Length: 454
Image (cartoon, rainbow, N blue to C red; front, side):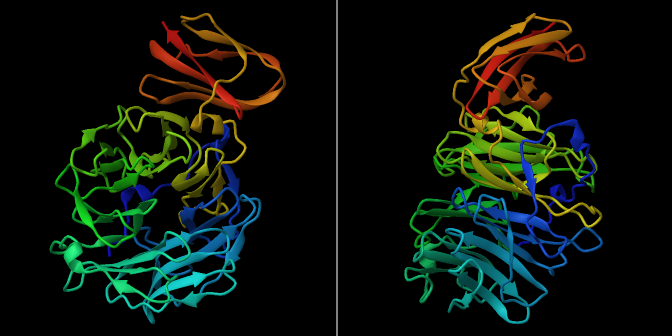
């Protein structure tokens, strides 16, 4: 097991949120303790689960107490705090959910040993499944109500992997002859794995990714593009694998440098798709179901308090920043109109614990772009100082207006309710000369226009 205590995660929440309307709407997850929502699972458009933890007073390690678990069954309008049988200290390794009722937890209980817990009634009752994992348990994932896989760190035979086809009533250890041998001192990262259909990928401390095409029954290994541990591994619905390498020479994580790679053939070959603006930690990349869009949460280090949400329509060839106010970590989407993210909370931050909800925002049209039915005029264009936006639409609506530079950096953002016919002047005199993209979006569509700044 490797617990990730990444420099990215030591992020301060000092930021002027009033400067920008947020793409993500905040909600109270009803945690009983002051903890950070570290993971969020969004299995459908109405149900979601999240769990959280707290750091110790040194801000450098998990306190491994006061774990919190919560769920919603009404698209985030209300959240219910859930208890589960465990002792503390311990480690909450993974959370898997099929819906608002059925979920599984992998937990390292220091007093009672590894546990795989299952609920079928939304957390009112939990059953400990009959499985023994000798090493540190890193994940328990169920593909459906019957088919599941559990993975623990290597023992004398290699990675300890078990599968079930009867809902966890019985388990079979996967023959280690079908699993690539582990390297010396190679472990898995607890809770960091990806699933698409019957396929599952998990990360190791040796910079490798273990992949199973068949619910965990057989395995192969993917070597990363660089001979070093990576910071990020993600997989989209086309089974494209992304690996990110981020580092900083500063203890506070500021001034990071990131390299990003993509493989369309499960690691046989890699493409360097490092963003033009690579001074960020890329914490998570998530695909949006039903679209070709991927979304990334990025951070510039805790001393800066800078967070952004990026989108890409071309599998990472280019990125566009769409939000710079929400402090997102792990994100998950059920579709282009439903998503959640956890907000990073440090002990020194006295504001309420929050979950971000991505429902009903004009930003949803950016995730699954469709033409916006408006008459649009942008003038003068080219310009040296102001642009005037004139829009005629059938009815009033809430509009999101973005301006991004050629690298995708967000240089202007506003969101407001506007009439069916409206005009707006934007001062861009301070921007460097160049070509910019103006985006105008509602919940029904988006229009873009190139703007040349002289």
